[in-house]
Length: 492
Length: 95
Ligand SMILES: [Zn+2]
Picture: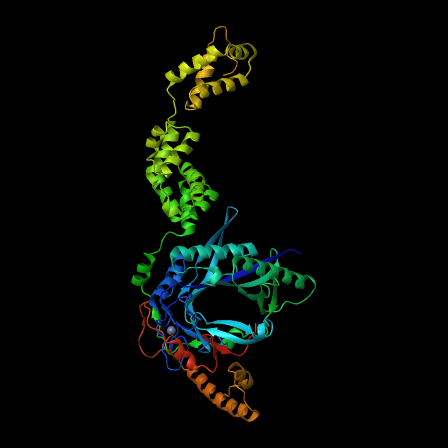
C-alpha cells in the first residue's frame, strides 16, 4: 500500500521587541543570566502583567501577511503545567479566541506552488532557559538544572498550519517561507541558532487517495529546518512501519532526539484538558477595530511571495523570480529602478545575478556598498541592445562602472570599448581582408567552403581589435563574397 | 445532581500529595463547588454575556519601553539555591 503523510507544522517565533511581553525587562540574549528579570517575569506573587502593544501589533502584521482574520475581540488564557523554567506554573497564552484565525502561506517547490492553510496565530510568552548539568563532569548523570529567566516572558507567537502538508521537505519549505515572512515584516530576528524559531509537527499517515485522518502524533523539539525535515521524515517512516507490520498507532507526543535521529515517546504527556486552560484574570480583553487593523496593514512591506509574482509579471521565469526575491534589498532596488526606466528585465536580472554578484564576492563587499545605480544598469543594458558595445566589452564597461570610473557610456568611450557598427568603416576593413586572402575567397566561391566565413570574420575582428559588431561583419562579408567576380552565392 | 470528581487525578495535576482522608474531604468539597458551577451554567440567558472579565476595561497596554530590572543579587538571595548567577533546581530530565 502507498501511504500519504498528513502533516501540520507549528512554528514558535520569538518577537524582537525591545521589552518583554508583560513587563519592561529588556529582551537581550547577550546579557548575563538573570539580569533581565523582575517580579512579573519571575512570577513573584502579586505581580501584574501588562501586555506590550508593539508585540500585539507584530502578531497582527504576521496575521495580516498570512491573510488571517484579526479577531474583533481576543483574550488571554492561562495554560497550567509544572516545569522548572516556568516560574508562575502557568504560561500566559491564548486558547479559544486567538488574535488571528485562518489564512494561508504559499510555498513553491520545483516551480509548483502549493497553498498551505493557516489555522491560527496567537500570542504567548516564552519560558526561561534551563541547562542540565552534571556534577564532576558526568554529563549523563545530570545532577541539577540551572535556570536563567532572561528569556522568561519574551513575546512568542505561535503559528499553526492546517494539516495541508504532505512531505517532510514541504514541511521544511513551509518553515523556511515563514521565516522569510517574519524577517521581511521585521518582527523577529528569526535566528535559528539562538532558538528564536522553534518547530513542532503533527504527523499522521493515510492510504494514498483516501481523505480520512489517521492517528496523529505530535513531535516536538526541532530547532532547525534540517531537524524539522529529518524528524518528520523519520516519524512518517516509523508510522508506516508500524501500520504495515499490523501494529496499532497511538495518539501521543514524541520527542525528537537530534543526535540519535529518532523520536521517543514522552513519558508524561498532559492532554489539552490537563492544562486546565482558563481565562487570565489579570489581563483584560483586547479588541481590534478596523482603524487599528488598517493602520497596521498600512505598514506591511512587500512579502516574498508577492515579490516573486511581481517579478514573474514583469517577465522573469519562476527560478529567476525566486532568486531575485531572495536577493538583498539593494540588489532588488537596482533591479526595480532599472526595469522601471525600461531595461529588459531578463538582461537586468542576468547582470545582477551574474557579474554584479561575483564582483561583490571578489571585492568582499556587502551589497549595500554596491557602486551601481538603477539608471546605470539601465544604460548598460541599453548600450548592449543598441550594439554600442559588444556583450564581452560590456563586462569591461561594468567593471569600470563598479570601480567608480563613471557611467556606462563614459566608461565605454574612455576605455575605448565602443563597438564599430558603421557599415562603411567595417566595409573598408572587409574589403582589405578579402583582398589579402584570395585563397579563402576562392575556397568559398568555387567549393562553397562555409568555414571560410568564420575565418574571415575572425580576420576582420582582429583588424578592428574586436570592436567591430560581429553581426554587421557577418552580413557585409556574405554580401561582398557573393558579389566577388565570378562568384556564385553559396548560401543565402 | 452530584458531580463526580476524579480527585486523585486533579491532585496529581496540581502536584498535591494528599492522604486518603484528605482526598475524600476535597472530593466532596470540590463536588459541591462544581455542582454549583453547573447550576450557574444551566441558567437561561445570553451565553455571550461577559462572565470572565468583569472590570469593564479593555485594551490596557504598555508601550514597548525597557524599564529597570531587579538586581541579580537581590533576586538570587530569595532562591533556595543559586550558582554562578543561575537558579539551581533539582535535575529535570523529563522529556
Ligand atoms: Zn520582567
